[in-house]
Amino acid sequence: MTCLPWLDTLTTGLPQPLRQVAEIANGVYGVDTLTANCVQFWIRQFSSGIFYVKDSPRTGRPVVDNVEKITEIIEIDRHVSSRSITQELKIDHKTVLSHLRKVGFKKKLHVCGGHTN
Image 1: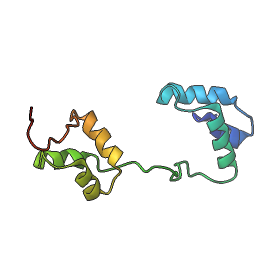
Image 2: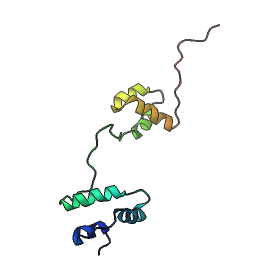
Image 3: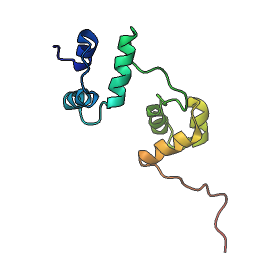
């Protein structure tokens, strides 16, 4: 018997309860780290000879790696527009606005001309 219950399933052919395997992994790596369904999937993968367990790239919105650069640009020029940051970094405008709000910047209206009575 090894310290990896799912490996025991592969080597001995004796199935370990999937929930038990998930509970052991969650005890080691943290709550909700692994589900019984994930354990079952891994056992199927390992049984078929696939030992690569990293996730494949996913479709959808990519994670923006350069949001820290937004703050750097603002520190250099406090009057730069969010649109110019969007164009320079080639990221979505909403991402720029969201990041600016998170770091404490607020949207201000541009005032054209003076105030008259």
